[in-house]
Image (cartoon, rainbow over all chains, first blue to last red; front, side):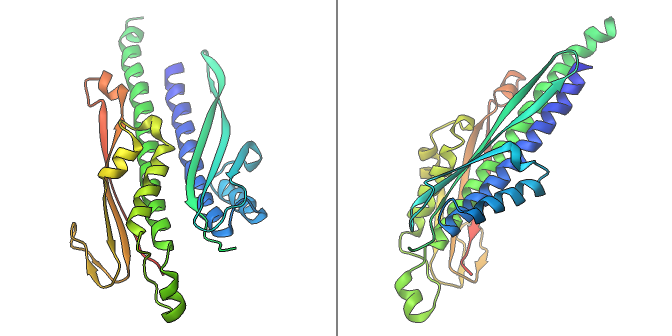
Amino acid sequence: MPLLFSVLEFGSALERWLAQDAATVQAARYAGEVGGDTPELRRFVDDELRAAGINPDRVSVDVAPSRVAWREPVRVSLSSAYPMSIPFLFSTTVPLRSSAISRGEVNR
Amino acid sequence: MVLTLVLAPLLLVALAGVLQLGALRVAAARVRAAADLATLVAVNDQDDAELATSGTLRLSADAGDVAREYFARELELSAILLDGAAVDIAAAADVAVYPSAPAYDTRSGVRYDRPTVRIAADVPVRTPVFGALVLRPVTTIHVLSVSSPR
């Protein structure tokens, strides 16, 4: 029984990781477009996460540098903790981290 | 009792396989995204002088180098999944730039109607659980990404 639940739980965690990765890639692309960490980017990330079925309040977002110049790389990182519970074995949280890099497109 | 003893190893192998396949799927998605972002960044870097004078979208002279550099940067973020250095994998990638259209891809014969940057790469990914199950410990992901400005 625990092994069967493990298959389901780990499968679900991997699916969530894939969704978070996809949102991160889109966010990096958008961060390049808007020139870094802006309110528009934060709203965009929230929308992308919600669309993927992830609660944005439980995901931390880091954009480095926060203000990017033209043709400079900008990195967006998302991290969250996925709660996992295997009956009769253990309960824990699995850290899920995603990062992507794009390039600044705003000529200031 | 006997049923449990028989089924437990099978389920353990199934669980290990699920985890490895899942990790491989994550790796494949990341590699694909790396190539996509690299070609996108490269085609977004327009020849500004040409754009200002004629309004024509033309790739920057260093588009190929930019694509390769960003492919390496993106792969570096998933270095733990790779069986090799990100820089080496990017260096071995087939990056092609077609600055004028129409053009035909020398690799696939596909016609491009706009200036295009294309990356084709073989990315080796670690699959240690497959290796333990007498399969391949390294799986190669073939990726092809094509971007054009609009």
